[in-house]
Length: 443
Image 1 (cartoon, rainbow, N blue to C red):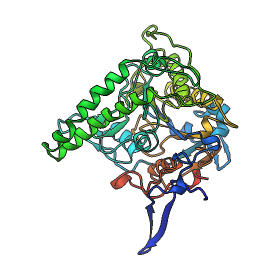
Image 2: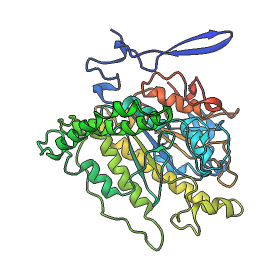
Image 3: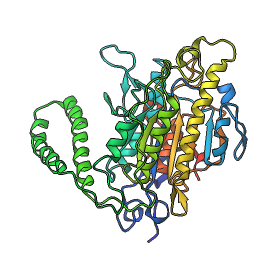
Image 4: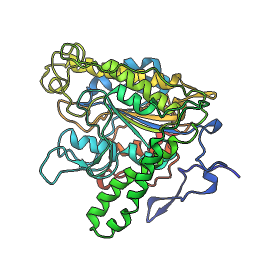
């Protein structure tokens, strides 16, 4: 039987317009173990999100040349070591409106939907539908201990990973706490006997007893409360599955080893957070969590929209500089290049992990983006988009695609969802919805 991608769609035309229909899961889409076909050796697909706040300087960001004949711009120069492993997409626009600067952009770029403004008048709002990391996690994250992992770098980072309205996944900000969660007492390397924590069985029993009341409660509440309860209990169900998997033998993955324990704390130095140290400690843990198949989806929040933390050598906070620094904004440029240097570190670490004849990066897609382009004007045109990895051959690498018509950023996100072998007919909603990916980045 010939294998069939889970991204396969039925395509046709109706009244002159292109239409597509998703297929249900078919036997041809899965291997003998019942898991989706991926790269050689049965290795899983992964997805990652690298997000930084306050955008870039488009005039210093956009590469020259197109296709495979392109040159890095000044702001992308820190990515020179991984140029052949990335694709840059420029000229794309968020189509969901800009009601609340920064906040509207984060919802548009990550979910393809308008920001849902809080009823109490708070300006930051919430996501109407799940963010891309959770769309993908719902499909490929269920076979691992953690359906998804969320991490942050700067103190106070909230992140923008949403399961749905008012249901945000807060990031872990402490590398030490993150290490203990992933590689503490319950972790076993492949082939390691280890000792199963006896408390796991008790926790599962408690959860089982709670689940017995869910059906009765669900029958007593209205539609809105049903949605809230479903979101809440989904987390409980995932915890139950996680505890069960901690009692199973770990997968036999050659690259999986217990990483070095990070520092207990990373205190600020002269009022500045240790951005690089925290980011690299978190990155090393994320990479090994993927290599050990503890998760297949992560979102890494380098900084939030509107962040105003002091970066190395900057004379003021990042957000303040985007609005107040005069002229060509050399300090804003410096900060963007610093962020790209740290993105380069993550890509290099992912590419350094050997899996069969390929690398961890070959078996995944990493999206790097922000909530605006030029921070000074809150533009939602010329959005910064970088993709690393080829998702087992589904995505092109080493190219620059330039949109001259301001195409919808959701096209990129739909391509990424489908690259995960997810048969999605569309991405986004209303003005942000698309039914076609971006062909230039697909193989």
